[in-house]
Length: 360
Length: 116
Image (cartoon, rainbow over all chains, first blue to last red; front, top):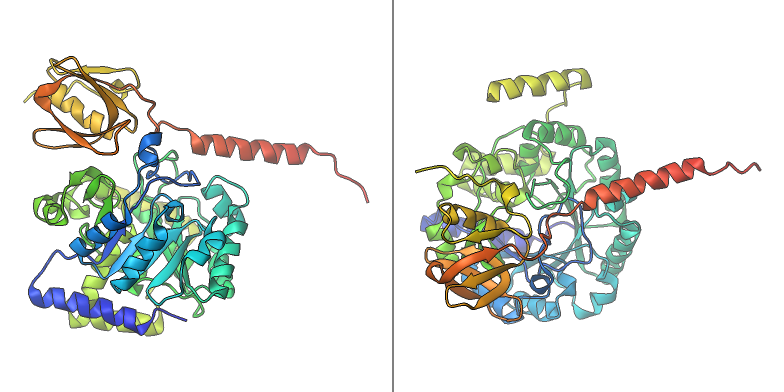
């Protein structure tokens, strides 16, 4: 099963409507963080390092739904923290389904099996399970043994009950392309609807600062992973974004595309950077100096960022922004994303060094 | 404008930032960035302990430790700010984890091989 046509239609018609209205800065996915508390402490995560009294605070279901209405995005991603720890997660999901929002509930799936009874299968609800690779890689990334098996059990249970399930995978420096390809095969065998991949972002607050990828390394890694990719692999993201990751095309960031709301308010400017909070969504859009973000701005924090939350909205906007963009998407959807052959190992170091000199 | 004399290493647990310091407003960036509780000493003699998450044009927004609601405190009311709580981002989780895994590998290699 792929992304339902109704979801594609909802997103397409929403984006076209925004274009017709002349609205340049529109949200595509609301990143709703109802809590920061998590039952894991992953090395690459900079989201959960807060004092205990902050980790105990949650957004109420009412606050979550009010933020959803205020934002107006057609899709809502619920990361965290671990959303399944939220005492009102059932009410939040029910409220969003009632609003016909397409929900990606991002979970490490440790609690998924035991909490499935709270939810009803729906085309609007997808469990997006954090899986950073096969057992060895995933357990290492989440800093706890046994989590891969637990998550796999959760995925299988959810699929059996008829829920939509996808995986989300963050790749860091040192990731082995062959292992990533084996992982894709494995997830397809398990029967998930699709996979999402993204390079990690160098959160200043993450405990592990050594393994975040630079831009050239990201391109090389994704070329190796995606070149000659199997037809059986299904990705739950824009094929143009995959081409961007592999360096086939370049996209600028759309920081307002995935606005973030949490207990502090509307996070400025994006899901990854934390430069203050706005009280309202309108204030976030109107008062943020957007020119200061994205690679072209020269902002150091944006130079190596190729994360999906900033660049996937660009890919979607590109699709509906011109016939060329639309046609490229159609081609990449039918024939697979265009991925250039990776350079041989011996040329790779040279290529990266040369690019660094050029970038200066 | 003179550049700040502060570095991020200045703002560790225990540091006190006085409002009378010339770099007070520069130091507020570190206060908002700090992932631990701080204690605000106010000019009226009261103190507020909690987590500062935002700086507005007029003051700081804080979740007091023992209150369900956030409050705003005007800059004029602040005498000093102490970095009183542990910096929760100052962890070595990944290092600890890799050390543990390395130790496990060494232990496995050190085990005698059982002969069939």
